Amino acid sequence: MCGIVGYVGGGDAVPILLAGLHRLEYRGYDSAGVAVHTRSGLKVHKAAGKIARLESGMPRRMKGTVGVGHTRWATHGEPNDTNAHPHTDCAGTIAVVHNGIIENAGVLRARLQAAGHVFRSDTDSEVVAHLIEAAGEDDPAQAVRAALRQIEGTYGLVVLDARRPDRIFAARNGSPVVVGLGQQEMFVASDAAALVRHTRQVVYLDDRELAEIDAGGLRTATLDDRPTSKSPAELPWGHEAYDRGGFAHFMLKEIMEQPEACERALKGRLDAQFGTAHLGGLNLTARDLLAVRRVKVLGCGSAYYAGIAGAHMIEALTRIPADAEPASEFRYRDPVIEPEVLYVAVSQSGETADTLAALREVRRKGGRVLGIVNVVGSTIARECDGGIYMHAGPEVSVCSTKAFTCTLVAFALLALHLGRIRDLSPARGKRLVAALQRLPEQLSEILVHDGMQSLGARFAERTNAFFIGRASGFAVALEGAQKLKEISYIHAEAYPASELKHGPLALISPETPTVVVLPRDDLYEKSLSSLEEIRARRGPLLAVTHAGDDRPEAKADDVVVVPPTEPELNPILMTVPLQLLAYHAAVALGRDVDQPRNLAKSVTVE
Image (cartoon, rainbow, N blue to C red; front, side, top):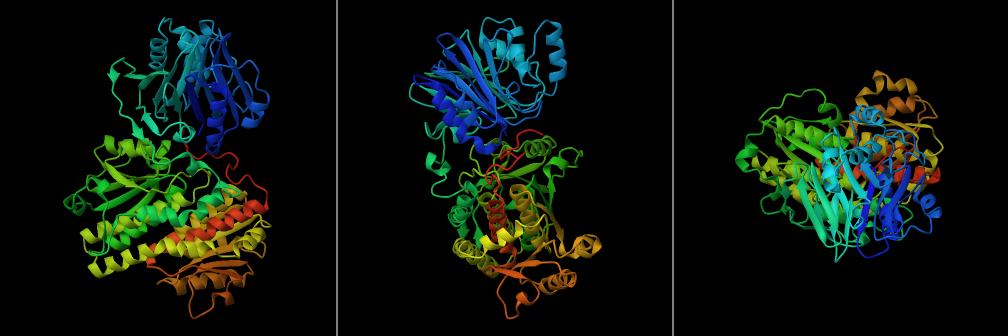
């Protein structure tokens, strides 16, 4: 959620740090700061609010070639100048930026205060600077190790120490840290987005690992000072992928990129001859997959909603029982882990804290976990037994669009692969392959719909909305409501259409529109009855449906038609109009579309 950028080399650190922090704005933040080793010592400058406020007040004498920057998303202490990072020790010779939560901060703070340390902020992070100071070690690396061995919780952190002004120290435990390799300069960040303008060669730190970094390279070791070896990896995307281009918002750009993203997600994975999908990254044989008796999908937010749709796909095509559960709930309920269950962890960033914790709980109890993630080299990708990369490309807007669509594509591939190993017929498999191949073109058709802007503007006049659907259409309704509420701040709720009469119908009125996900499938007639119930109470209706002989316009005030496809793939196409609806409603209301209030792109704290 917070962002970290560090630099050590021969260049002026501050412009590099500020540019990197701008790259991380999409993660969500409420304050920012930098610390630099200058000729006159360690200097810190920080401010609440946007990075522009930090820049406008930047001191002139903030010159140096080694420094660190941070964007904070408040957990402990309100957003203000004092609670912004970096935090320093009593003497002002150690500066720390920290992502994560120190769970025993209260105990450590009390102990340090009793020893005479004076705290300036309300944060848990300031504890780290004082622990390093209190370690009494001449070697800063050993002082950092001594401090971290006392900490309980999660951290991704970078430390500057005036005793070694030529280097920075970085460590992680549950919160990502990546080191960028340059020519006589090195970079460190919490997200590769901050590094792509400078290097494509990176090293990912592992949990409870410390890196000592100078301009010539890095040395890594465990907290017990056992050396570790790291192999560089190449980032798959250049800096152009993180630019907004000619679009007004990253969200709109990413919505419009969905045909290409879908094509990447499918590339090299479809086998038209045998009507199946090739997924080499699963690391599971056909015999292993035949032994699966149930599938459990774990994710948070949009990843969870994609998991609901994915579970429907898997159950329909494989006849294996499948369901989805919020990872944030699963991890806390002492789940029973069964050897014949295949667990699937879903996360765009690959760093979602609750999903990672759920994954680790499953593996600790002997379960097998596949990952569906977007970020190569992410923690979930590295800790799963196997999985599927979405290949959606970098997604900068907090609101997930193309990654959600590509997650559904990944589930369709997994369901097809599992189905063909089991009882799905070759003919059915070939129909699904053909339908998957048509998806990029069909997505392009939806994106040229010219009525979404006016629909969004009309929704912007409302304060509440309902979304309903049946079976996999309910997952689409959940995602549609999520999109509308998170970027427009219009209150929106999703229900199974069959549940409408069991309570929500009491709230239907001429002031409350309902979006109905209405595929022409076996449940079409049932869903039409829900439209009748709403229309009888004069509720405004928007139907997302397929073309047909009858006219849903007779029952709905507005209709958005999407191209026909195989029933299992309907959620992939029917989600896109709801993304556009939310986007245009938010724009009409003047919202910060890419960085909605209180939310962050990568949720790396509980």
